[in-house]
Image (cartoon, rainbow, N blue to C red; front, top):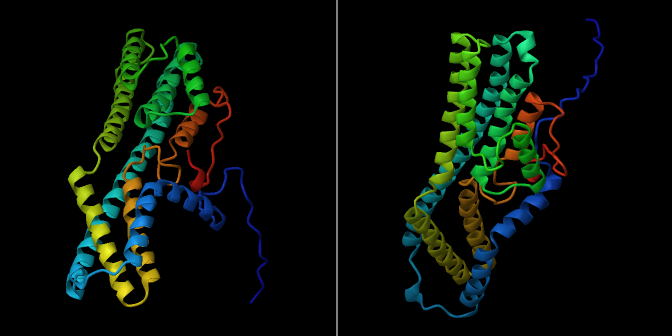
Length: 313
């Protein structure tokens, strides 16, 4: 057998896939503790009180009752976690679809226009519509924004001769009218108009899915029941370990259950102002779309994209 030379791989300019490093765990933990601050403020005095006083035996559940409550708690936490991840992942898939839709929008335009029409300022405005739409959708879903990014969108809308108060709906209507104008002016044929409308409709479908996730939180009654079971079970578990002369173990388990339930609660809202470790990187996604469609044209100011999931914005 002949020895084969080992050829080292080369790296490209496209960046590495996002990954959370061990060095980032401290940042993630600090974000989590910040979100748990009110739970911990309530938890610490309760634990201190229950550990320091003698609890009558009649207040304690027997082992079978604690086990049954633990099973119920596991089911509720498991369901809530599964539902939270499903909501988060569905939102991410819809935004992934919007990335593809945005690229299709520019590609379909280019495929149906002559070179002269493609290089026309009117066509460039049509491409800018998609960029304005994704940023406006980002801001409407979250209802907060980086000031430099808001300024960037306002400048883009001003360039397009549109008001800074434009919404996703008004921008979609303006774009639909422009598609019709392109058709009436014979810039595109009937098939081109159909394709552009189909791309626009897919964007509208994705927008509706994202708005559904945003505007439909988990039922309040379910949220209350899950949290109540966690606290009742955690209290009984802590008291049981106190009787076994191991209160620290009980406290640690109690905290673990609270953290598990709260993480699921935070992930349920992928557009909330919960911190980058729990929400979607919408600014990063919109920046990717902007660079694909109008490279080098927009001024993001102080905003910098990152592939670090603990610093997503």
